[in-house]
Image (cartoon, rainbow, N blue to C red; front, side, top):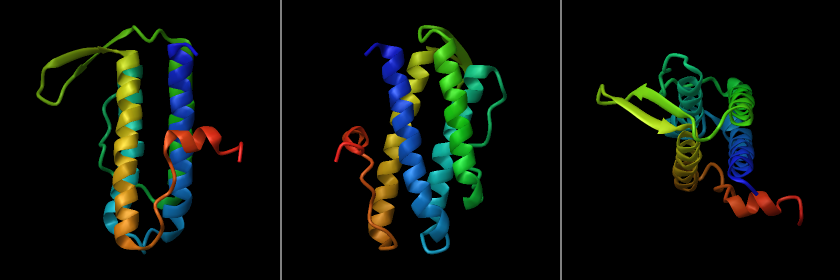
Length: 153
């Protein structure tokens, strides 16, 4: 599998994880600690943020909390935009942006999307801990290997 196909697969996986989490979070939003809602929205907002940087759009606020009924649609839109970007552009393309310290940083498109994939995994780990601590729901099996074997068992 070449690098671009691998990244596309990672974003299929990321989208699947988000859908599975949203299906648990959305109907029980008021039962979970507020932090669950904040982290799920942050995962989606960060995806928007990096898609925007790769398409020349302005940065968005990564900490807006979305209504639960909007989460699946936001996730789907992120997935469509990411697939379009990854399918139509070279992973070695350089992307420059104003960084958090006010300077200019330049990285490759591939680096941005590897970062974004890892960012989602990191925050899904936080959600697993919040699920366990709250007792509202059991942590979901969102490891990559479970995604790869989900239809085979």
